[in-house]
Amino acid sequence: MGVAPIRQCVQRQRHPGRGRAPDAPAFEPEHPVPPDLPAPLTTLLPDLGRRVLVMGILNVTPDSFSDGGRFADVAAARMQAEALVAEGAALVDIGGESTRPGHVPVSAEEEQARILPVIRDLAPRLPVPISVDTYKASTARVALAAGARIVNDVWGLQREPDIARVAADHGAPVMIMHNRETVDPAIDIVADMLRFFERSLAIARTAGLRDGDIVLDPGIGFGKSWAQHLEALRRLPEIVALGFPVLVGVSRKSLLGRLHDAETKPVDRLFGSIGSHVLAATLGAQIVRVHDVRPHVDALRVIDAVMGRSA
Image (cartoon, rainbow, N blue to C red; front, side):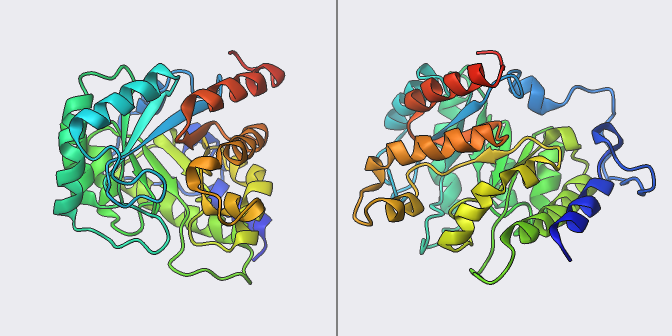
């Protein structure tokens, strides 16, 4: 099946409020949400769609590819989170399990032991929402109870589908990232993304999540060949065309090192990160996930002005 028919298939399944095709059957969620309630996503992120938002990364792991171990204790995490917000982050993404290539998965108990003290400390302090970077339903549940407001799932609700119901029960928006268990350089990666998102959207809607509570992420750096990462960025408008806010995260990733110097340390990939995110913003991304907030805020302010969006 080509990309256009797949996209049409996904579009036909949209919620009525998102332009569902008249010939498509409506989804009947198991836990319907009253349609007159405001979407939590726009309540939490009121500038979404008015300007490109910057999500600040806060890894509280010992082995993340870029900053592992730096913010593992509450005091260091608090200082970093406050710095991210002061530099202009519209939300802070907290993760307790590294998702770098070759990482060793951790148990839900270990993940929760890392993130919960930080979330409990930061939730009442920060003027911006916290998202929890997890694919585990049990971790999402306790993180939301501790004060996180958004679920950012690198497996697009498909590793543990119950995570969608957890989010719906807490009124939390979800960020659905495309991912693959194995890299297949031969496939049309955007067609694969569209099929993946179709499955994820069905899971989300069945759980009671509304389309207005969903963000899509093409998953740059995950489950793709180097050429497919570039293709996913180049063809980002095909994901934007689905009608959901799109998040892109290329910050400090190894594909940038390959474009410059394979020996470049992650912390030295700032310019490539900014260039990638500026490109993504011009192609329709509404959120970028970054380590270095201030340089991105400054660069994206120019893009917003050029594109006629409010600064």
